[in-house]
Length: 353
Image (cartoon, rainbow, N blue to C red; front, side):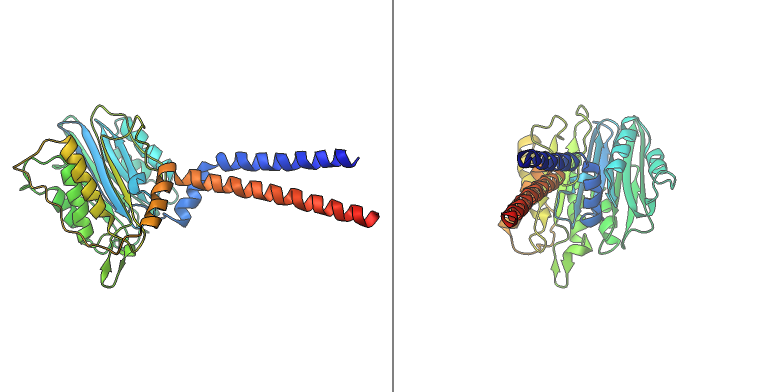
């Protein structure tokens, strides 16, 4: 009888662990929702989205005072358009915007769809920037929900096929200056990626994300990225806190992502350094181009240990890390339960003796 009860108890515990593990690995949507509510509710607070209608290339660059990859905001549909999905980010809205881009919807149609109350009950917390093109028909549009943290807003220019947007910013100058930097006419025959990075640096120079700034100390962001897909590449998007693998078939032609500890260096500095290396290897030299970096606030001192942890999490994915942690907790609970049951049985046996 005791042996039969023991086997039954172990079977029940095993089922509990199995159900717990299955739940952990099959609720990524719920986990992502918890992540954005607890950690990244104002994900990617300033960004630039732009396309090159001549080549079909599309790109975006962004930065935020969050300790995970800012690339989550990007939705790239080469040959069709690009978008930034930010503020109260959700994977559902990211997928929806990318699907609408791939369907050939215009920027205004996409914004009209995702900003409807009957589509999204939290629309006042969202922010978008979208640029689309079909031949010479270029559209750029944005949306900033009224509940976004100040300063918040978006600006577009159809002639340059660009949209700049941000929330929780030091001031309106962050977006205005970024847009002006992107549209500068004295840079020479620079590439789309050059303009994107200079715009992002200019936004940082204007103060960037105010959550990363203190009196006498401006870091402007914890995470920054730049991504450009060529016209013949697959569409691209990535999940919360997960940079794409170098072997990902949808990896953009240019993809650089940097994360830093809060209070550490401005991530735009490392982003620029890595971009310069990438440019020297992938783009022709341009003696008639102005390619100098825009000076940005330096931020604080390096924290290599914390940065290494953040980079590891961004490689494997925040959802995977939390799922793994959830699994470990379930297993520990199962082990403790077995131990307590066995201990109780031993005490009961000793008392009966």
